[in-house]
Image (cartoon, rainbow, N blue to C red; front, side, top):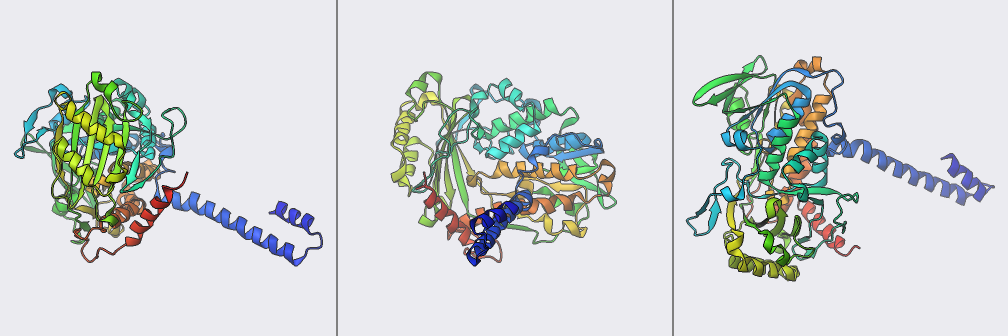
Length: 530
């Protein structure tokens, strides 16, 4: 500020009113900019995002690990990430996973030649998933750049795991090639060079993502034990949980626990059954939900190497998101179309949306579906050439279709009661066990990563000797709620744009409509920005 004063004095040594006014205006502007920087860097970003917490992942604890055992109920994505974090903070960790296949074969990428094909009652080909409890096993995952950054911090061995599984070619520059209905958006990065400094991400199926994480935990966290069994409840010890009841081959056993995490997915068993049966009284309105009547399907095609030179997509045959059209609900057409190339030469086509009565399950139906979209006129010509390619080489590519009818979106709002002594202090629920989001918004894996990173920050704030006296549940949900609420609000605002959506009880479809309209306006402006 003194430099500014000297500049004003040089400009007008007599200190005229105009110069003083200029000085005050400049001071106000500088203060405004400084205040904005402070608010953004020290309040808004730390409170609403995980960007500041990511850098601490996997760092050594200052006072050693917390004595005792953490038990993770569920061994899918949320459970594996939670286990990795807990392994950095606790002496021992147990993951209880109901499906034996996951513990016996879950470190191997399923071989394409081992797929078991069958014909559905509707007459189209599908396959049997090795993970019967994972509804979207064959669907794709969208890794926002912060997620991949967090994974690399949490798992220093991640590059080795990716190389071991021969998945190096799946790590690409983060480009989405996206349109929003008829609104075409430009990716900010044009390079394909992953060493250029541009944000990068892996382009993987849901199944491959889980294989990578399970390998990373098994190789990098020696204090994690994988146990096959079905969690059936909790037992209390004072005001906390003391053990987890697990059924193994029809016989129940108790696993003593100092910290318990529910990562069982959308069944949300802690809310629907386990905590109540353990003696905790939960409000009936703690869980809120709305239903956009969402249906979508994935079609998976394996492109043999000899067909790669005939690949019609721009840039040649390579991994990445090659085309995405999101539904624009304000036009009345919420349907979307996404095409990605993932591991093992697999093309994953995802399509569907809210209140979709019929989904394609053949190339001819896919072509008709795309042609009927509101945004059909901005679909690039090579997409129609790709459909020709698929029709010509369908037999060689061995496609299958997997339909998915998604249950209502839900949020168990644990943060409302965590500070009131209504929950065990040594328990949390993460991932879908806490909140389910519209999968077409591609926020699920980010939400899971957000939970694990938030958990790491909470545990890092506690001394090992004070853990047993801390209300971890209140600390976690106090920190998590402002970070996930924007995801819930924005997704709900979009889904409320359809008259067929059943809203949260007590709400109507006009709630937060400004969020949807503001977002759409920003996209309209962005398409004209170079």
